Length: 403
Image (cartoon, rainbow, N blue to C red; front, side):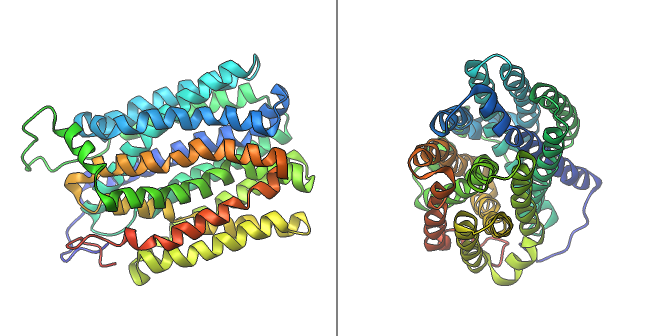
């Protein structure tokens, strides 16, 4: 994204940029901290792959309930208040899941549902703020905000691996995570800039946010971007939920090494997101995405069919790199028109998060019949679909993005 005229960046925009990074990083850290302990929760609750898939489904169910509501909510109360409120709710969800792991499946499911609900609305809020900051800065940095999310996930995964190696309980580990994330994000999200220019006329009716969200559901481009994001969300979500389990069960590595395989995946995704803006500005969204889809397919195939754990770890790197830019590019495409950004991002995220609804039970079901490791090959087919419809993320006519 480029602007025709360079404009000075105010201190408020700089603060909002830092705050947006913090929101993304905090979300990633919280999620990866939970994901890093999935194998231990599974063992404690004695869950088979299918049962684990259904437990993980609670996150997606919460997100899918929140996402259709989040567009009108963000439009009405703003991204700052939305992220503040949802960070507190997410912290509560992590806490309930952590303490619930000492009791049984039901409280864990309840905690994960709250985590998913909060994460869904938080996701829309911080992505809307990301598009606002992009417009103020006049350049493409959305994938770097998502790199902030990935940095948070890497930190969460590495700390999680250390907690596993040190035999720190899931309850203690995740309770501390909840407190840290809520404290950081509540402090930073208050520094967001307004979602709309105060000089622009406000909506005339109470129904305007809801009407805008409903209209976005009828736009073919928005719906196709949603399917595009769904494919990448499936690719990323399956990696988050299942790489450590597949490495432990499929390659018989110790639990700490299984978590490090997850961390390698997240590290590659972070690198792709950090350096992605230069590639997107030079070569355009469509070409870059299609090349990354090829990387992702290669990575998944190597991870699934590797002759040894070493090659499987290499596969996670290609997988993570291939998954890196799809979600942020989809969010940027949804925000090409600032007046419709909240509604469109909400719709795109709602469709995309269906992957988190279908992913865990799909892999769990296939895992019972093929092994979890072999079941992961379905990711390659979703990446092929994303490559085919990648033209849908090409910027709208008149967008400040040249590509």
